[in-house]
Amino acid sequence: MMEEHSITQQIQAKEKLAFDDQRSVSSLESLAGVTLDVGRMLMEAGASAGSVQRIVDKVALGLGAERVELRIGYGSLAVTVGIGAADITRMRRAGELGVNQRLIQGLWDLGKRVTRRELTIAQTRVELTRLASEMPQHSPWVVSIAVGVACAAFGRLLGVDWYGTGPVFLSATVGQFVRRELLRSHVNVFICAALVSFLCSVMSGLGARWVGSNTIITTMISSILLLVPGVPAVNAQSDILEGHPTLGSARAVTVAMALIFIAAGLWIGKISLDLWL
Image (cartoon, rainbow, N blue to C red; front, side, top):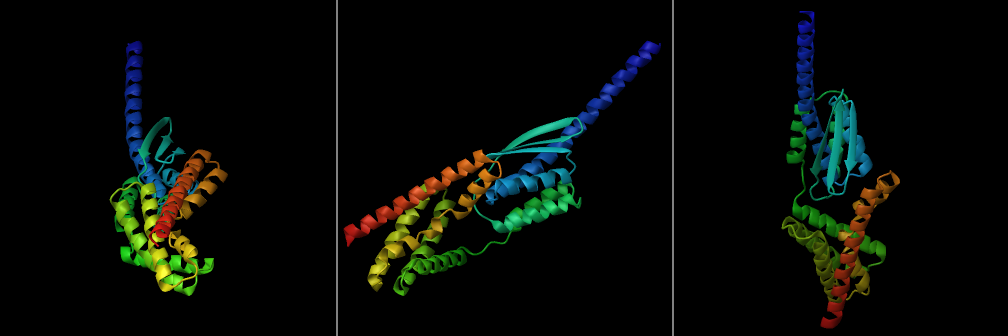
C-alpha cells in the first residue's frame, strides 16, 4: 500500500511539473515574440547593434525573463529567453533597413517603462502596434524640399557658387521624390541609387551650365549627397568597435556597394553631359 501511494505521488508530481513547464513555455513564447518585435523595429529604424542589445535586454528582463541572449544579424534576429528551468529560442527576419530616429527614441522610452514594470506583455504589444501605426511622418514633398535645401547648403560649403545652388536644390528635391517612389516600388536599393545619382547629376549639370555657373562638377557632386549612407556607415563602425564584427562588416560592405553605385551613376551622368554638350 505504501509503495502504491509513493508511485501515485510521483505521477502527480510529474504531471504538475509538466503542467508548469507547459505554462512556462506558453509565457516564454509570448515574451520572445514581443522581444523580437522590439529588436526588429529597432533594426528597421537604423539602430546600432549596441542600442538594439540594450533595449531588447531592458524589455525582456522587465517583462519577467531571468535570462536573455540576442544574436543580431544583418537580415535577421534570434533571441533566447529563459525563466527558471525553461528556455525558448525564436528567430525573426528583419525587413528593409531605413532611418527613423523618432521611432528609435519611442522604443527607448518604451523600454524604460517596461523596466519600471509599468506594462505587461499584452500591453507592450499594444504599445508596439501604436508606435508602428501612429508614428507621425512628414509629407513626401516636405522631406524632398528639406533634402534639396540641405544639399544646396552642403554645396555652398563645398564651394558651389550662388548660381549653382539653385540647380542643386531643384535636382536634389526631384531626386529625393523619385528615390522614394522607386523604393516604394521595391526597386533594388543599389539600382535605385545609381538611377537617382544619374538623374540628379544630369539635372544639376544642365542647370549649372544654363545659369552660367563656374562650379559645374562641384554642383553635380553636391546634388547626389542625399544618397550618401551616413547612418549605416556610422553604425558599421560602432558595431565593430562594440564587439559585433559580423554585423558591422555586413553593414560596411553594404555602404561600400552603395557608394560604388552612386559613383557609377555620377560618372555616367558626366559622360552623358560631355557627349550631349
